[in-house]
Every structure is written in C-alpha cells, then in structure tokens.
Image (cartoon, rainbow, N blue to C red; front, side):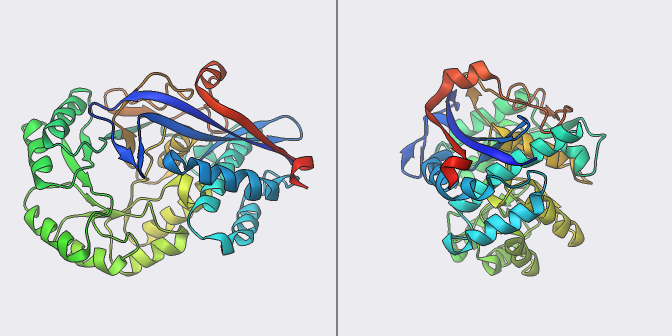
Length: 375
C-alpha cells in the first residue's frame, strides 16, 4: 500500500526524577517530550514511530516535515529496505548522523508497525523470534551531580525490583556510595558519564575505579567516535559500553575493528530505525560483542526496542529512565514491574497510543504532510 500521509506531533509529559531537574543541551529538562510520527497508507492503516528528540525536537521535526516525509509520500510502505537506501542517500549531503537520520528513524519504525499490522504479527516475530514475552530492565538514573541523591535513588530502584542500576554521574564517590546503598543485595551498578573526559583523564578515572566492580563504563571518552581512545581505556579491564552516538553500521564496524567496546548500544530512534539496529546486532554477534540497546525513551522508540530485544538471540537488558510520569500514552508497556518489562504481543508494535492522553498532553499543532503538500 502507498503512503498517503506522514504526521508529526509532540506530547509533553510532566515527571518527577527523584532529584532537582537538570539542564540538557542548555535547556531545563522538566518535562519529557516525545516526537511522534504517524504514517498512514491508502487503505487507512496507521503506523506509529518516534524520532529522536529531547532538546533536538525542533531540528528533527523540521527535517522530518520539510525533507524526509515528502520523500516517502506515494512510496510503497512495505519496501522498507529500498526506502532506507533512498532516503538516506537523498539526505547524505545533509549529514550522516543527526536530524535527518533521526527523522528517518521515526518513519522507519512506523513502517515496521504497519508491516506487522498488515501481516497480523508482532514486530519481534517478523524479526525472527516469537516466544519471548518479558525482558529484564535496568534503571537508568538521571544526572543529579550529587552522590547522596544517586545513592538514595539506587536504593529506591533496588527496592522496586531492579537488579541493575546505571548512574549518570562523573565521580567515584557516586559509584562507591551507590554500591554501599545496595550492599549485600544482588544489584550491579553501571556508570554513564556521557563522554565527559579526554583520553588521559578517562584513563586516570578508570584506574581509580578499576577495583570497584563496575558492571560497565559507558561513553567515558570525548569525542564519542574516538575508537582508539576507547580501546586504550578498555585495556584497564572495565567493560566498555558505547555506540549510541555513532553513525550506522559503519560506525559500529569502526568500534569493533578497533577493539573498543564490550557492549554495543545502538539507539533505534537515532541510527535509522529497526532494520539498521538489527544489522548492527548481526555484526556484533559475528564479532562476539554483546548488544544492549540505548533506549531512554517512552514512546514507539521504546516499544520498538522491546521488540528488538525480544528478537535477539540473547535477550538484552532494556534501559528504563528512572522517573515517575504523570501519564504516558504508551502505558503500560513503558513501565517495569519488579524490574521486568512485558513485550507487546499484538500485531505491529502492539501498542497504539491512548488518544485521550495524547490530546491532553499534546503541545503545538499536528503537522500533516500529504501528496499535495509534498509537491
């Protein structure tokens, strides 16, 4: 069936993060915003996707509405591989990693939702595994800049049944105090520093934490594509996780070729969607590297990650941001219970948004691109 329209809309959800609100890309992050993509075919079937957003939503949405969506109007919705090649080639001069790829990611996820709905199968069955109904989650704490708050929320996450907790802090004190907060319990602690240091400083930090039993050390080096720097850090003996910021399959080939990572973290709303994530997963499997997708989302990008995780030969941990939301149009699948997530079993993504919640929390207008608008 031909694609007849692409819509973009934003929902803004109030949340409590268990500490003072942080600034993200220069903006106060006190509401969770989701950039939703709705793709409709000529028979009225609708698929939902999510394009990478947070503070990048205005740029991603502009790329989606003005360039990427018009490229797919009138095209066959089931021809996902051909559309991927066409759209990414058409926009490659505009950037191989960034708003245009993020925009395509949202459409691509929606196309998989459509494909599954048309076939009457959940996406994870289309990807090759139909038996997994649950996945274990890890709690991804937000950045507090305060070791005491990090430790308190680590304990709270463990009390809710999470056996894995990730910090977004940059001090050894936060790691040690969080470990002490769950001492004697079966809880592993990871640390994501969001590319905080150049290689010499990262090496100093890794050496200081070498004996602390960190489960993994995430994106310790600036810039994130410094594969050789990551490889030097990996030699310290702490498992290294990275990949959310690299461009496509070739970006992961560079990381793997340099021996830079133990854990690969493709991000479905940033890398080009479900198909590219699965290609990365196959590459990593061939190279003996574990895949744990990056998924700090609460919309179709998160639901797509559940399907990807359910389809992988070895089930990964699924990242869930530590926050209490006032509401979410994709509940209950975005919420972990006792540290576990249910994988939707309905056709496609198996989780259309709640229209009442969407209406209540939508901000701004719905942008609709049709054949007339795309000409």
